[in-house]
Length: 173
Image 1: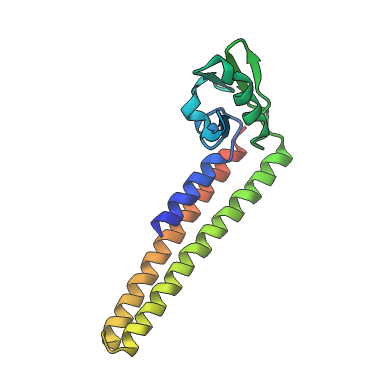
Image 2 (image 1 turned 60 degrees about the vertical axis):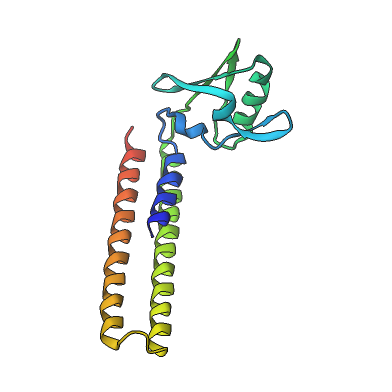
């Protein structure tokens, strides 16, 4: 359940809010001498200002490849090269785009809730198997099922809190 929550946190971090942050480019892959490599391993990524990310490749020959990788990463970003520094300006979000992003965030949240509930179902199935094999008593099974349900409720509540925080963040102008 914790892994489902961490995966959701990572997914929500990828959804941009109009402000620049270096984590946006963490998953961009660059062709580095024939092998796909994370952009963070071939370039220094910094914040130039609140709305611009600066990417400076360690090798001059990588400037074009890094710029192309950022453009092709389907993040809606349009990098511009300025000598050895690649500037990645963050475009303003329209109201309609913000609403679309909220729908996307809610969908990811629902997927995380489903994953948590599937874990609950698997755990309860294991309990029933143990009960059939008479390795635990019915009282123990009921007690553990209650614990599993409380854990599930806690994680679903955390997911709801994360979604609410991200929605507020997306709607902030």
